[in-house]
Image 1 (cartoon, rainbow, N blue to C red):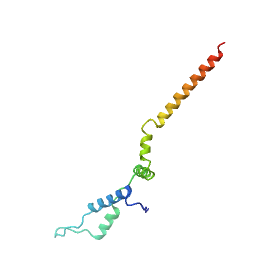
Image 2 (cartoon, rainbow, N blue to C red):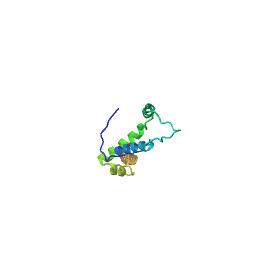
Image 3 (cartoon, rainbow, N blue to C red):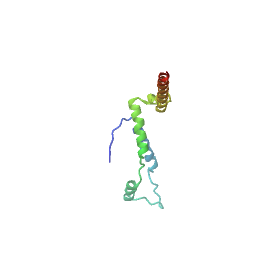
Image 4 (cartoon, rainbow, N blue to C red):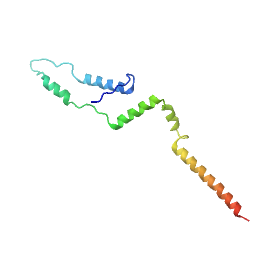
Amino acid sequence: RVTKEVDSTSKEAKSFLKQQEKRQQAAPASFPTGSGVKRPSSMSTLLGKIGSKKQKMSTLEKSKLDWENFKEEEGIVEELAIHNRGKDGYIERKAFLERVDHRQFEIERDLRLSRMKP
């Protein structure tokens, strides 16, 4: 069992509290006591609680939650949005560098050809 302390206002803490509320609402508060109704024994209730499947978080969900928390903690949400818009994006920069390199090559080629002519 792993315990983790988080701020009570964080997304992770809020999602955990929501899960706890859902579990409490799903469990019946009391069983009706009638002549024809059989009450479950305490042993079967305990085994039911132990054997019940807990909702597990997948690796992708955990990674996404961690990334969102990191972006909020570092305050880089807006910076990432601006960076990914296109002009400052990786693909756009690579295309720009290729165009500059091609243009520089043409200038150098024209200069070499002009020097070769007598």
